[in-house]
Amino acid sequence: MYIPVVLKDGCEELVHKEVFHSLMTAQQVLLFKRSGSWAIVGKDPVRDLLKSFLFTIPDRRVRVGINMSCKQLEKCPFFDKYKKDLAPPDYQLIIESYCKGALMDKCARLVYEKTKGEKPPNDMMPSGAFINT
Ligand code: SF4
Image (cartoon, rainbow, N blue to C red; front, side):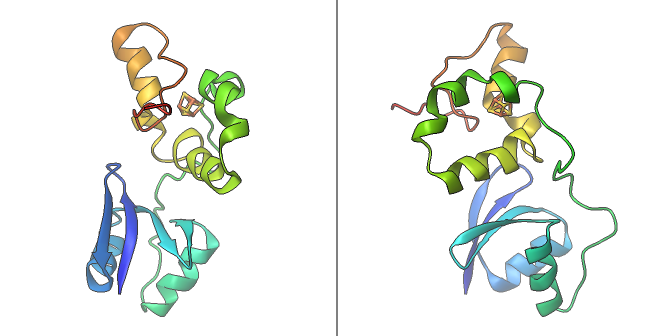
C-alpha cells in the first residue's frame, strides 16, 4: 500500500505504508491522500487513521494554521483571477495547505514578493508553477 503525501518541506512523495508510519511519527507529514481525498494532519480524519496505526497525535500539533490566514487572502490576485476556474477540492486544498496552512511561508507568491520587492505575476500559483504553462 502506497500513500501520496505532502511533507512539511513541501515535497510530494508516494510512500509505502511503513514509511508513512515513520514520517508520521517524525511529524514530517503535512497532508496525505486517503480514499481519494486529501487529509490534513491535525484534523479529525487523521486521528482515526493514527488510531488504526496504534499511535497518537503528539500534543504539539503541526502548524496547520486553522486559525491563521495569509494577509493577502481576501485580495490575492491569483484567486481573483482563477478561483472560478479551480475545482472546489483543488481550491480547498490550496487554501488549507498554503493560505491557511503550514505551507503558507512557502507560498511562491509570498516568497517572490519578499525577495523581489514586487508583486508576482497573477498567473503564478502558490507552488511557483504558472497556471497557463
Ligand atoms: S496564494 Fe499565497 S499570497 Fe495568495 S492568499 Fe494564498 S498564501 Fe497568500
